[in-house]
Image 1: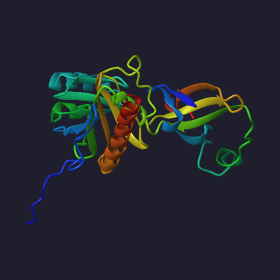
Image 2 (image 1 turned 90 degrees about the horizontal axis):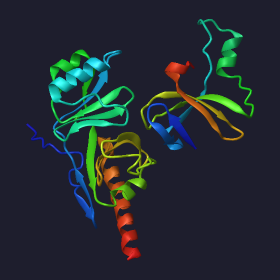
Image 3 (image 1 turned 60 degrees about the horizontal axis):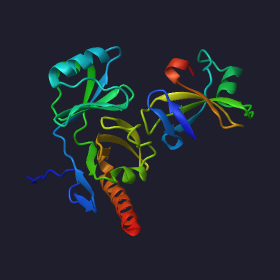
Image 4 (image 1 turned 90 degrees about the vertical axis):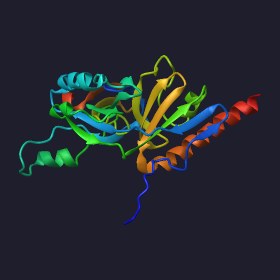
Length: 185
Length: 85
């Protein structure tokens, strides 16, 4: 019998540190997409609140904390990150396990926003895109998800098959931002 | 060019994909001259157009965008489900 080893999407690729910038992999215990049935968004939000303590996120927002987070993930779609979804949610929404489908990385650093500005077409200024905001967008030509967890902390997601491309693109952007800083000194 | 997605807010052109003219689909399954117009015939006049766009790199919604091809002004963006294609 073959002996299988579990590999995370970014095995062997991360972490990467460049100057004050750090890119690390995040491996959530469980990721589940929640697509509410027609007219069930309110009931789903109540069930989520009761079972996991997170409400249904409005477009472009996320709710909860690191242990259990609900990320707005598209039109009438949210991603529950962290806990195993409670059975009560299934009455109000289609639940699909996405745990192995996405590569999740975290970018930290004072200049993280400058790195992201090179990769996606969003307005990332704090007044527009504050902590707690999220977006589905174009990340280096990949369909991705960008979320601001903190002032200098960002979460980036792309399809798992593109993990190596994501790390490559983000690392190049990190090096260029860092090199610009060095050359200005 | 930027389009104001009713769900996501103002976003860059590269997040959207052009899906063609926003026309009403003819009734019924039997071929009629209206189907020729629906599928093939376009006047392609300069000025105000009404087109379908999809926010494919964003929320995924289909949108009806009214814009002026002469001035490049975007006059309105609405969800296709609400505006009717």
